[in-house]
Length: 294
Image 1 (cartoon, rainbow, N blue to C red):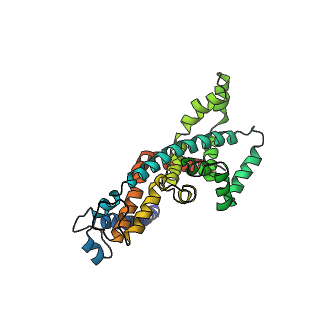
Image 2 (cartoon, rainbow, N blue to C red; image 1 turned 60 degrees about the horizontal axis):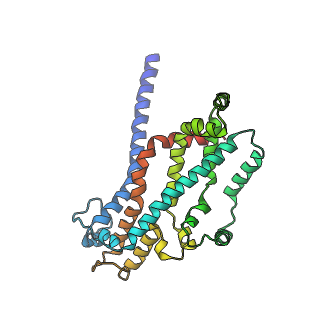
Image 3 (cartoon, rainbow, N blue to C red; image 1 turned 90 degrees about the horizontal axis):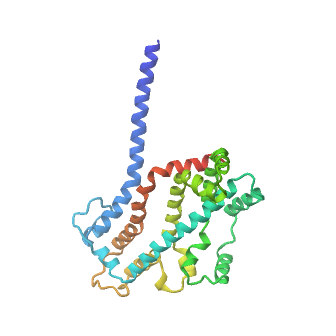
């Protein structure tokens, strides 16, 4: 009887494993194939893009779309703006988020519950676009790169994840450090931050993606086109590629708009894909440890 149950269990587990793996492979292909199509289409020739609706492997390799995108001199300045905004913005956001999250994780902080309520409330209700614009204008941030950073410096969701991460650390660590002579800053920098590296890596990736994809804030707050980040410039390139030569472009023949759109997606996505492997090992651990305990 026991042997038959073991055989049934073994057969059932094998069937489950096969079905589960098959479904996971199908889901992975459903996510991967569109991106492969985007990359292949960006390198395909004009004739192939026009004649085929779906491309996995371009028969004729072409760099015309990338030559067209990179032929505009302002694209490199926009790339520099995005890289600088992403680096500085991520550092500022992580510093503010870490300090605030650690403070709110301490149960003895006066007014802690009220501040936590305000943070959760801001996730459900916000001032909106016009009040935010008036505040940015009132403090003199129009046409300043800081207008891309300060209005979104602290994300409530990321703050809660990091606060929960600090709350999960045992209080005995802080007590032991203070017995050894550490003050609050010493406990934070020498004890808590090293233990919070998985959470820091995960949230840094969240902030980095947010700053890299900055578009609406740049449209609202930056009137000087020379200060536009890469996302806004790429959109302008897609628009002008539909019917006219890009300003300052040295390319005589404009590739199809579809090819340019695919190349724009690749240019806008690849930097974040390159950064992801460096924080991948911390990603799941940091997100789960900060999200489990409420």
